[in-house]
Image 1 (spheres, rainbow, N blue to C red):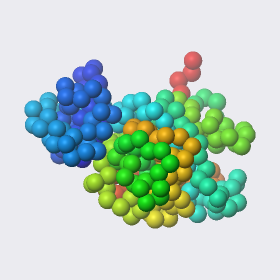
Image 2: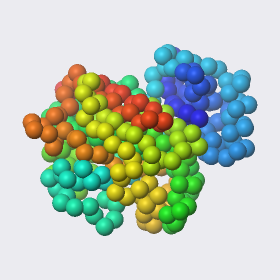
Image 3: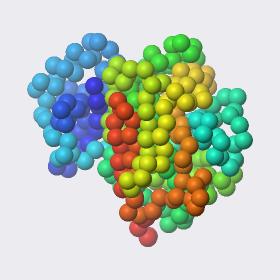
Image 4: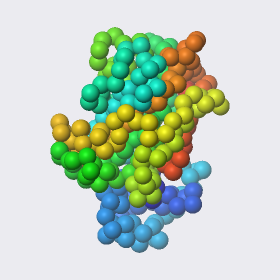
Length: 286
């Protein structure tokens, strides 16, 4: 099942995508999060299927996709979680003993096809393609072997980063949270359709050139470890988004650096999950 949010004829809607058509479930569920929660149970899936039969249908080509969940409660991100990214890093010399966690704010992410903005204050705008896990039930101090049971689905995420702001201090937050500097989507593919999340292939392409390619089997901290660790310090809630890290090949590590510029298009492609593409523009002067 693929769950998406979008805008059509001036109205926001959400629903389930089948054969390039979104079935609008706004008359049945209060929010995209409620729809996601329903998809997490057999009873809910049956309710969704019945509702889809009478739901208005909108073709995807007529829809502006938005972030699948417009206002996720938390967006937790894992830094330097692939060995090749650690090797190319100018800040981390070896893998840490525990996942390196930082946060993004919802305003920093747009949906598939929406414009990503390079801010006026920096041209060191970098790309990072990632797999994001979306929580489906409350999870507090879960064991490693139970962690995947808390995941409702997966999405692509482009963790756009302003490298100079990221490096101002040891904290990542400023460089990761410029408005509209990243993206996620194009939808949430439910976990039952994705299967084993450690066997997914990720690619990041910038204006037609492949920049990153990796298997999620190469994660230093696997998804179970990430979920379990985060659930130790906070109770994860339905709709929380956890970005699992980016592989090697980022722009700042290239010679010369490959920064994102206006006119570029960034694509994050994860087999079995989706393809997220966004054009880059410059911030409009105030």
